[in-house]
Structure formats: structure tokens, C-alpha cells
Image 1 (cartoon, rainbow, N blue to C red):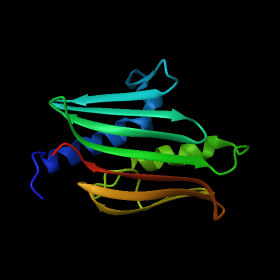
Image 2: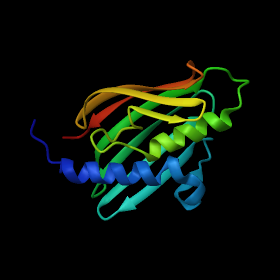
Image 3: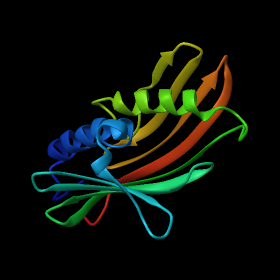
Length: 159
């Protein structure tokens, strides 16, 4: 596949965004803003790269991430998910989700690692494809029962 996007630089930027975006909003509140349409936007910049994550909702939720290089769209991902039981305490569920997103793997900078355990909770992530075109699903289990799941897909745009 011929592309104008520097894939190594894109991967480095996605790793930066995964570790500095939603996963660490508590320590970087300036990166987030509420929009008039009710959505939330997370914006990050580094050199010629710009990251824009816009999502709606809590339960369920959906959104999309777009990476721009020199103000031109280069890569995007869409995602949709929910906590299975709307009456559950989402605090521990989103705690492990943020831990997983901060542990974004070098080989697949889309969401979290293939597995992460924190006490009673286990994060699992399965994906296919490469940075240029991929899809996957993440789950969080509590004592072996799925309490959260989300699907995602994306890749290069505007080749």
C-alpha cells in the first residue's frame, strides 16, 4: 500500500495520545471541553500532529478519533460501547478502562493491551489488522462476567 503518511511517526503520536488523552484526563483537564451539542472533545497536539477525540454519552457511548498531520486528516477510529448493567457502579469499571488505555501497546496503538488485571476486574482486548486498517473489541469482566464491552474500527483516511 502506498501512502503519504509516515506510519512510524503516526504510531508514535497515537501512543502519546493514548497515554495523554482519555486515560489521564484527571491530570490534564485542559485537554477536554464540553461542546454545545452535549458531546465531549479531547484535543492534543504535538509538532505537526493534532488529535481530536469527540464522543457522546455515558451509557452507552460512542465517538470517533481523528488524527491530522499538518491540518489534513490522516487516520481515524470510531468506537461504541456500554456498561452491561446500567445500575452497576461504573467507577471501578472505568478505572480499569483508563488503566488499560494508558497501557496502549506499541504494536497496536488503538485501545488497550490484550489483557490487564486489577483486583476483581479484567480488561481484555482483541483486534485484527494493522494501523492502516483494523477492528477490535474490548471487554471488562468482573469475576468472569462481562460488565463492559466496546467495538472499534479505523485506519488511514484521505490517502
